[in-house]
Image (cartoon, rainbow, N blue to C red; front, side, top):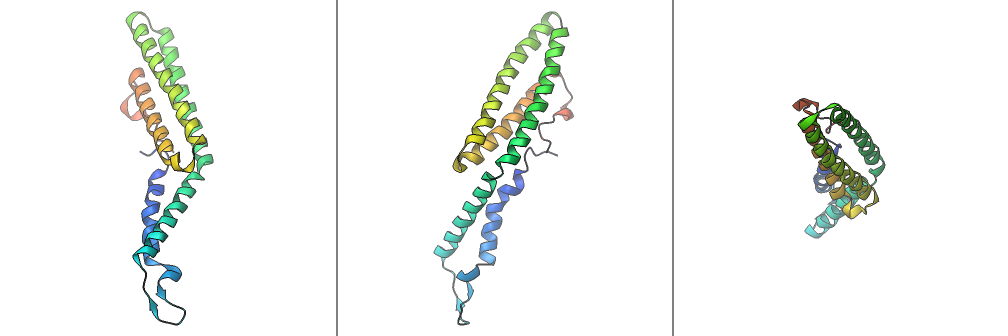
Length: 163
């Protein structure tokens, strides 16, 4: 699959919530208690959409535990690939060894930054959560591609998108 963390569904929730509020406005619309049709004002819809957006944001923020497990699993897989590359570098000679060593130094720096991004996402407030989570997801994809490129792995073997 081509997604990192199942965010595509979560990203559609605000729109879905807004549509649901418009279709099912609850007590704000439909019939009033005396049987007359009550009109839903733009202000009421706006308020309901804001409330739905806050609920969605709260929901995604509450997914930190699941995201942390996924992130740690991704880091472990990337670490295994880096270890394999370290072994290749140790067995290489001449220019190949020098090139792999330089690549490894850059990749290990990226790996440390990725760890910091995960920790920042996990320590974030709900306001910053979406951006930090997305930043980690993108950074882990980039590191996976960089490892693949440095190790000469075929295009289809990038595991950065699983789960």
